[in-house]
Image (cartoon, rainbow over all chains, first blue to last red):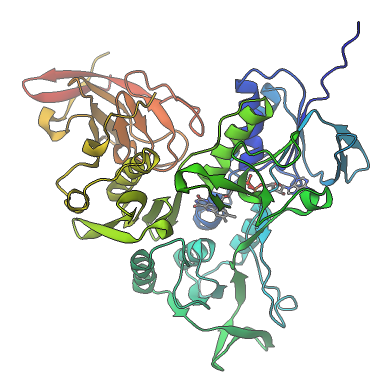
Length: 418
Length: 104
Ligand SMILES: Cc1cc2nc3c(=O)[nH]c(=O)nc-3n(C[C@H](O)[C@H](O)[C@H](O)COP(=O)(O)OP(=O)(O)OC[C@H]3O[C@@H](n4cnc5c(N)ncnc54)[C@H](O)[C@@H]3O)c2cc1C
């Protein structure tokens, strides 16, 4: 009797989620062929440094590789750089590539990430508005930054604010314009956003909040951002950080449901039991938050989902339940958030030597925590809060507010970390 | 070769916690576990330039404050992505209420 050889697992997208999934498959002793497809020409790299050290490093940096150089080859993972998947044929279990070839799969993972939303304004394209997602984008930006450059940052989200801070460090004259009444949007509590805005202003960045834009126009020496109130903001360079759109085109064309991202179940499986999705491209139900459907754009989520998807690709049935965690670095301070602050209906503030540390409770149950300050004051308690959220704890608000009560004491029984 | 350096008092570190110690251009994290054993490792996470003394000690594991890279404190062994390079460890002795680390 002859057995058909396993055509192997194909992963589309060699970002954090896809690469982690590939490496985890080998950790889990999957021995079949693994093909990792990446549209970009580099070895898989980490994106978070792109708005931070890539902009500020004295010497032109190289990408920070995921797992380090040589890892993919050592794990016998076939990495196809600079090649895009153009179509999925579910009936024949094949992925078609731009170079005309096709790959058979036994299981398929979509880890296609997201792309920057483009600025829907007259003049945006003609005046060379910049975006930031890839290492190439980051280097193009880096090469523009110079002392005295007037940089307009459109959008006061994480990427825009990090770019603003980095550009200031490089000596640029930076203005951030945010259409919404305040920077950082719904995912970050107003009190924390106000601290971040204050830090940017104190550092010398102008932040304009609550004003829309109407156009980008050319000027004799640069261009101008035209604000809705008629004001003009002159700039030598413009970067827009106004959100990201999940890369769902392949899934959609293959007839898979999309709901603010490729729709997956708790195991990260799509409607097709052979196809899974992970990272910025997918939306998934979160068991810790009553099954609320989330799509996250966060590094650790991409990593954790990549790992989880590897298990699911191999038939494991556990649901993904990791509590969301996010960080951002600006002006030497760190912003960290665990859980979902916007799920809360009560906020408890702990004063840590003048720095507010916020706990977000929903009907007494801890659902989020957030803080902005020196990493040494922020990180441990955010991590402990994450464990408390995961365990469904309802700590006494008075004790939460009391800085002399250590958060570790709420962890009962103690979660084993090994 | 042994070269013992006085790093801190035993009570400068709380139980199941860590502090930073800088000496001669080098930076270390000194740990006190729940069972009152003391250890020392290189101060910075091997994944990114972040000080481990800002991280969380859970049992015998130190978690990097940035990306949750984990290391076994007594051996310095990396316990999972994104950290994959082990930490350097240093000998520690406690004498008369002081913690010494061996930089020899
Ligand atoms: C500048 C910047 C700074 C950030 N900073 C932080 C931070 O401080 N903290 C934090 O938590 N998160 C941060 N993030 C977010 C984090 O990097 C992302 O959440 C993470 O990269 C998502 O990983 P992913 O694998 O889902 O997607 P991606 O990393 O986007 O990878 C997807 C890959 O798939 C490729 N691809 C797409 N379609 C195809 C196709 N058809 N064929 C082949 N390949 C394809 C893409 O080219 C891309 O390389 C930052 C992101 C950026 C851009």
